[in-house]
Length: 232
Image (cartoon, rainbow, N blue to C red; front, side):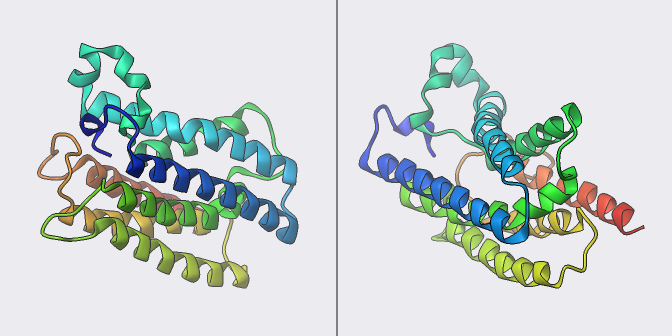
C-alpha cells in the first residue's frame, strides 16, 4: 500500500481490511477443521494461531518502517501507528512468524515438533500468501509495470502450489519439515521472478535486486540446506 497517499480511510482501504479480516477468519476455521481431520492438537493449533496474529503484522510493519521509509517515520514517529495508510512487508511478516513460532517451541516443549507443526500449517500459509494478494489488487498496491497484474501473478502461483502440496500431503511420504521447507523454496522462486515486473517503491536496491528478491534468494539457500539435512 502507498502509505503517503492515504491520510484517511478510503473505500479501497476499507475493502482491503475487510478482505484481510474475512481471510483470517476463514483460515482460522480451516486450520481448526484440518486439526480435527488430521488429529493435530487443537490447543497447539490455536496457540500457534495466536502467535501468528501477533508476529505477522508486527514483523511486516517493522520491516517497512525501518527499511523502506525510515526517514519518513523518524521525522514523525507517531506515523508508525498509522497502519491504515499501508506499509506492510510480506517477508517481514513471514520471517517474524517463523522466528516467533520457533521461540514458542524453544521456550516450552509442545505436543508436536516445530517441523511437524510447520508442515501442518503449510497449506494455511499458502492460502494466506496467495489470497492475501487479492487485497493488494483491490487496494492497488504491490502493482506491476507496463500493465502487469503482479498481485494476480502471485495469487495464481500460490494456488498452483496449494493444489500440488495438498496432493503431496495425502501421500504422507515426506520427513517432518521437508514439506514446509519445500513450499518456502517454491514460493520464494515465484516471488523472485514476479519482483522483476513490480513497479511500486520497495526500498533501495541491493546489487540491482529488491529487498524481497534478496530475502527470497536467502530463503531458497537456507531452506534447501535444511531439506538436504532433513533427508539425510
